[in-house]
Length: 259
Image (tube, one colour):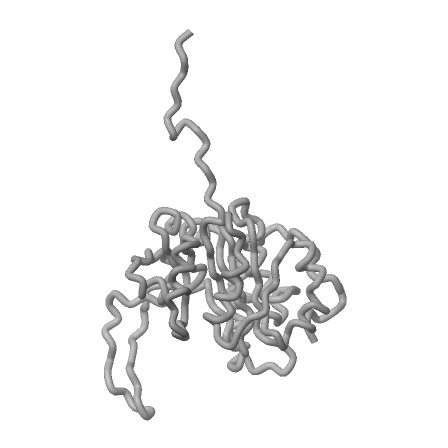
């Protein structure tokens, strides 16, 4: 009997593994709510950060999810969400003064056998599985990829309340998350940070000279900054397939999620 030979395409391809970092340690100064920081505000009957987390927790390739919270929020967060964290298997890390400090602390907790790290704003709850698939695949192929949308409006540079220049929008894109990188690449980028308060992780990778692939996202993938954004997100969620809930919506069914 002739022995069979198999090409790599005939065999099951190895699945890349991902950790997801959800920064939720910001001050939410523009959200202007005395009771909530934006990642913990109620949206469609559960906290904003839970919507974001659930998009990744249902994936077989995501092996770790790390939520970053402010030290000053930690006690109250634990009192409200400890059951969710335990049931969903989420790691919680206390953040630093600025966003890059928070991500760097979470990055240090990523399991050593994980190949890729995705950073996704906890306050960006309307990301679709299709967009996650595409940006994950692009990162596997190129080492670094982010979701982004082309700038469509007219841009003005302003000083002292007056327009100084109309900026050409051709080739300009607005960065979104997830931003996904080969783990060692992101570690190297943060090791070379030199205290730069980067506004996103791609900026640090760019400084290393590594190209970052753009994957077109959608305006639906909005980041909640104001209460008006929260209302828009409630409408956007209606347009997205609902992920299967892996655990209880909240350990206290008649609580208000934070207050």
